[in-house]
Image 1 (spheres, one colour):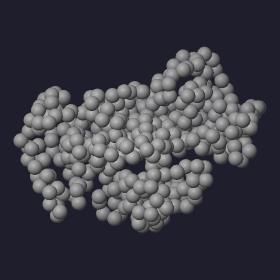
Image 2: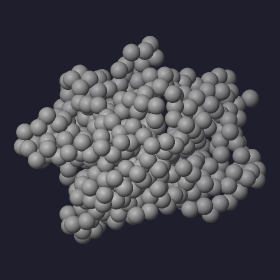
Image 3: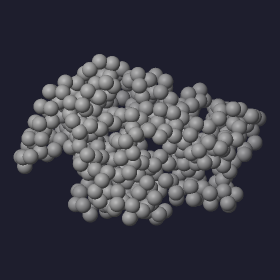
Image 4: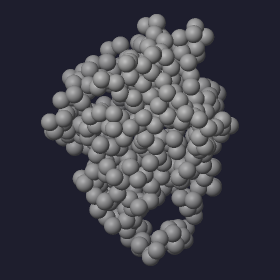
Length: 445
């Protein structure tokens, strides 16, 4: 006997993907139940903490800067980066084609009509540095949302709450899904545990104390909670061989609740899971001196001027510069025998080129304050969050003498790995390139 239905659709996860799905279902007049294990204060999930960068093709922002982009060029870049080479890549390739068309078509206008705005200068993420058909973006396509992650979430949170007011949406926080129910071979619901009320701040770990059970049914179930970034055991389990051995020490750019539980739950219910080894990790992570979640990491967004050295003091090879080939850089670092790298830079470089990713590290952009943007980005001095990390961060060393700097850098490793003389020669060689309008230094051309 088929179970009675509690709604027309159940959405698992109240992050950005879940909110978008729910908002679109509401527009179609459907009754939706959204279940999420976190308190209501974490509505929006990990997207809240993001920089809010989006992939757009041939946008007005690009054209204003005379950046020539097209669907054809973007698809060429996507193919060079994705490397579709497996039998199971048929649907990922179809999805990618549709997404590139979407990014060049209605995506921006769809968001703009909902009130989303972008900074006027698209960033150049993953530049590649190889040949035209290789990895990377040929042009800047990284469009940062005015308001960062919270600004991107806002219209979808608004639309979902309007659905609640209309009686079409029910938000079930503190509902942890432990299983998908299946009848006659079709998923028709969810079952799990009710977790005790929690007043945990957004992003902070919340209680997992169970106080009851629940079971809900609907003819459509959408699982939008598949992130694994905070589950380092699961990351290591699926670590790709092409990147070498997984690091012993990892940081998390996402809260603890991004635990990957829905991956195995979906598999158990019959889902076909493909390409678990195709994952993304940043190599410029530093410990947050004021953490919100466990092993809280923040990504540095450095410019081209700092020297990037491996653990032994050797410069990373071309084209492994910041923002060029993240996974290629990770594979190289894991081959050096040391998991850490160094950025060597000056105060002026920090002021002009150094930034931190994430909404909370960019309060001027997140708060949509033009006066604060001008004060922090245009006037002298580094942005406040960057200066705070420089003063308090465990990963920052500040000295006005190179010898003392090297001594303190060596003090942080089990054995002294850096040679002060070698580092000084590297710095002087680089400075000779900077002083000349002509240079063979690829990172400063």
